[in-house]
Amino acid sequence: MSEPEPEQLSVHDVVGSDFFAELVERFYAGVEQDELLRPMYPNDLAGAKARLAMFLVQYWGGPTTYSDHRGHPRLRMRHAPFAVDIAARDAWLRHMLAALRETAESRETPEIVLDAVEDYFVRSADFMRNVEEAASP
Ligand code: HEM
Image (cartoon, rainbow, N blue to C red; front, side, top):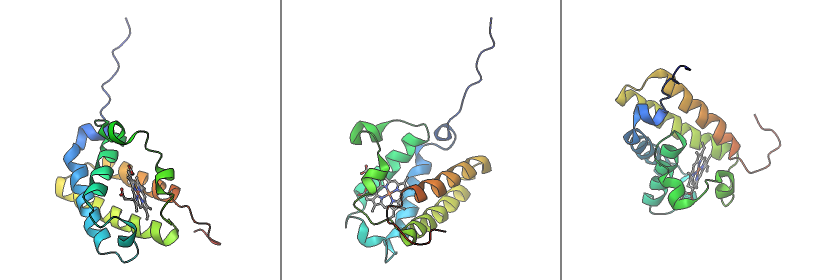
């Protein structure tokens, strides 16, 4: 008989949905104060908060409520209406990484989880860029 597979814990198993709710609240508190990003978002941020939180919960192994409501994420396509240039990417990422560190600190999140989520945001924010620019650092 073969050995049983070890249980695989997802990030969501470790941190729970509340982690992402807090992260998204903190992130949008930053966006609300940002002159470049704020005008890109709807006046009422409630829907944007719910969509981002549902997406992150799903991405990190929690319930698939995002896709049940929105279908396949297709995030690059969904960002096409917004001009995501280097400045927008940097502003978005700055707010998200600050929110992530605050949330992880307030919840004593394991370092390995924090590193994985941080890496993901750095790579994905760049992937969302959709404006050709001469020099791309
Ligand atoms: C790690 C990178 C990113 C992730 C995971 C992400 C995720 C998302 C998600 C899940 C939505 C909602 C999609 C939907 O179901 O309609 C969304 C919307 C949006 N994102 Fe991003 N995004 C990223 C980067 C960016 C960047 C760099 C910008 C820069 C401007 C940006 C601006 C927006 C805007 C303006 C919306 C519309 C708000 C709304 O949902 O009504 N995003 N994003």
